Image 1: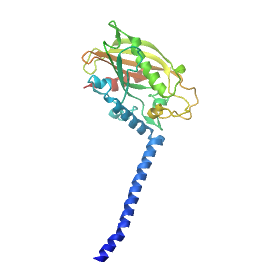
Image 2 (image 1 turned 180 degrees about the vertical axis):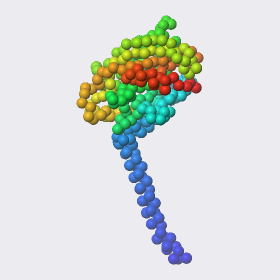
Image 3 (image 1 turned 90 degrees about the vertical axis):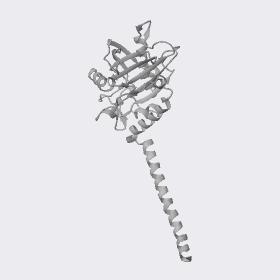
Image 4 (image 1 turned 45 degrees about the vertical axis):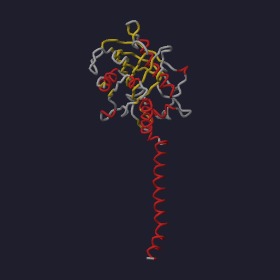
Length: 288
């Protein structure tokens, strides 16, 4: 019996040491994985998606979508093999901070952009179909009345101002574009009845040519926008935030039951890309 006790006592330090080594190894692996996620360029896409999903969860309860009881099933890169868009939609809620001063209302945005390649989103890549491109949905709720109409007439300037605000005050600002350099000019090319979508036939379609800033620039500091899109390419040798030509399309309708204006949007390089994204990602959106 004495020998058994002695052997047990001798084995305990070895067991404790083994557990300590295993614990240290696990901590080291976790620390390595955390550092990889936090700093590695190859993990930029995963880092972006994780941060934006956490941000979206923080906005979910206060979002206009939730306020009016509108849950949307929006197709994303997850729905199409080989899609150039990111796999998950993102939610942002600027709330009452939107471009119409003195208007009692709120807005929320569901959006997506080009997937990550070589440590950054193709949002930065002039050779990509997803250069300076977004698609998604705006939900705008006023304290009284329907956003997008003035005295029964379509208020195109107010509607386009939302797109401009998104592009300049949200996207370009997050990437460090100076206010003095921000540019958004548009020319409406067509306004017509939109296709039937989500069981509604009262959509209005607006198409436009747009000139606005591209995200390309020389990095001089760490900015919040880099968490979303990754950092700009280091070999870029052009001017900061050059103005480029692009195209845009909106589908909008006012849902009287929920007192909300819903606007589908897409901004891309060519009409063919606008049409394809509309067909695959906007027209199939389901309302729940």
